Length: 369
Ligand SMILES: Cc1ncc(COP(=O)(O)O)c(C=O)c1O
Image (tube, rainbow, N blue to C red; front, side, top):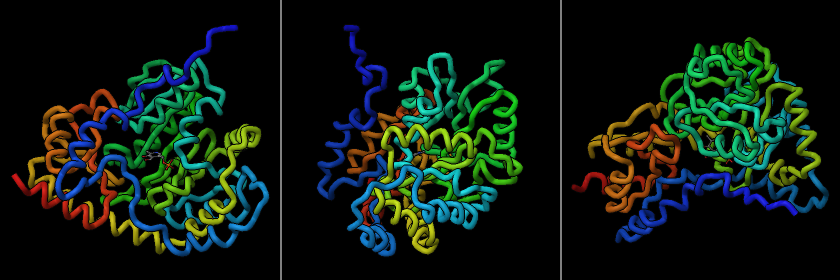
């Protein structure tokens, strides 16, 4: 029998496990911890979404991997209404069990392997790298594609608005990515989970007609309902774009049982059909962002980018662990920049995802010297 490879040995340490000590220090604050690290939603799921979930809770049969026609139509309509994305065939929508699992599996699902190159942003959501490593592919961090020289990547990730930096890539930048990918035969996976949370300027989808001229060939847009609809606990997202690629993903996922539970599909349909709860959530985050931003700047932090998304990309011009300790003494937990890339060691990522009461507590503590 050949030696078994421990797959986990191919992967980095699970980042959140590495900040247990500083979390314990923040938790010891007499006023309790203000956890601004992971970015998990804290506001309740909207009643209309819960009602949709409940309305089919008695249905016993297997759900379809492709999702109900109602769900796929709701996704197409929401992309058009909310972001001006047109020309999507409902058949080219595929629900996923939260987008993290899709991203972690995508290079493998697309047939990438040891000979392939996956390009991820220089400051990146860690799962892009994980997915490439699980497929045995090579990973390169590059924000400018000229950095790649003559190499032909198989897959290019873009993430606008970005986690962790909150940076938005403009139409011209995205057009260049699409042109480069077309020239080199690469697939572009655009992670758009923060598109609905833009505070300054305009963020656009890779499928926006201004970006791709209505041609979705080799383009995939990944959408999560975790943040815009507070559905992180439900595990709800979808991928759309190139109909041929989506059909291929569907085929493999059908064989693998990667089905979104039927009540979650109903909940997603309701969430995608209603913009009021989404707008209400956006306004909650906008208010929290204002309070935190002011308090951080008054406490000597500089905030870079952060024009969109759920994080303030903040620095005190020192190593992130020094800043993390400083915050933990005030009972505040943030994420160290080094989770996101080698060039990020002087940053901490501060999430807007805490209740109004906890955000006020953080602001008050930041004001104490
Ligand atoms: C950039 C980015 N992509 C994907 C995800 C995964 O979201 P989910 O699996 O909840 O859809 C996250 C979660 O924080 C994220 O920040």
